[in-house]
Image 1: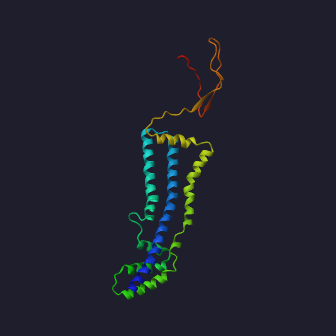
Image 2: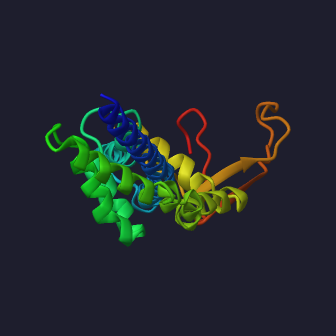
Image 3: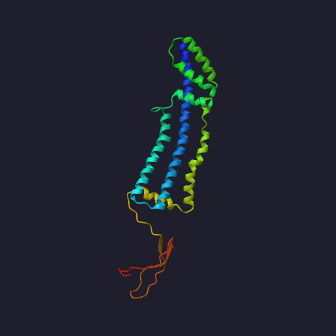
Length: 243
């Protein structure tokens, strides 16, 4: 009985170390996944917004863009965020202890075989119990000094921040340069993808008169200006159906 308890204690010590490694493994994936999710989603948002701004697409094409964006965001969210979260909380199929041992072995080559062998021993029945106990004690002692958790370094995710922040900086530059309409107007049209929009006029009229009333029969000067990428050759005023 004492020997069996010793075996269980050694095995539990190993299991706890592997469980801690698996948790840190999924936390690392989650950090990286959040960076990927925001970076990729924002990049795709910028891409379709700029495409709509330049193309001024019809309802069908805007609907395709809208649903492509939603589907891609959901897929990215599931793969890079939801899946690591499921693993972190041990929901569904997650990283097995054997697979964790193999991953640890890629960082500490000298311990992979010992770790896998120790897992096999801990799962064996009580035949040749003394021999099994001795092997478990020996391998556990050898592996106890191996820092499993150091195989995963959260700070390595810093190199992915550049890719995640690049779309954000592009968006910031558009807003600071006064070109936010490229994003705001086009994205609003994509969101309202089932609505038909009239093509925006390339020029804007600005009236400078303080008042638009006068005495009948007198001349009236309308002061106005035109601003835009294109300027009309002639300007008319329609009053009561007369030009």
